[in-house]
View 1 (cartoon, one colour):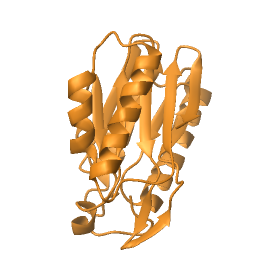
View 2: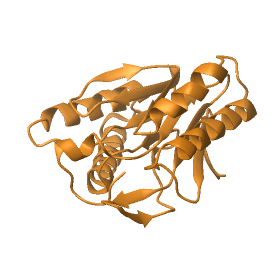
View 3: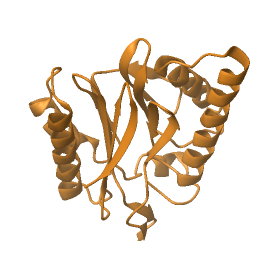
View 4: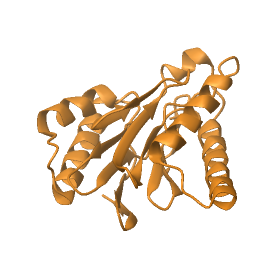
Length: 205
């Protein structure tokens, strides 16, 4: 993840590892905390998991400014929807909104590869959204330059009936594997969010 504006070419080189997975009774989300500015490590403790609703989070990989701008937009849109409709947006609804934002900015794109994860009245969900506005739902997903290494751990260890503790352990191992092998992933912390029907809890490893 980079701390300043980046070009399309730079976006392909942006470093981050974020992931999310659906477990038996919750959704587990994890990310490392390193931010780079060229060859400079500008932060070792940068949060890459943002709470956008009571039971919904967004992970970010890409430009810091773009990520924070989109988080502000989504939070505002979610609150406006609640006030005007007296209802809550679903995880799919927020993901579709984000996909539309990404697609509409394709000629001056947000350099961002987010994950939207959470729990709503329809169940537990994990969506990834690409910079062109493509959207997909999966039982687990990972983004960023460290994602190939994280996927290796996830594909070996993921089960649909995992408990909260098993999900946290698998997410931690996947991010650690990425930090070991991906030069652009690292930092001091592994940040984790656990989302269930009662709300969102943040942990730090």
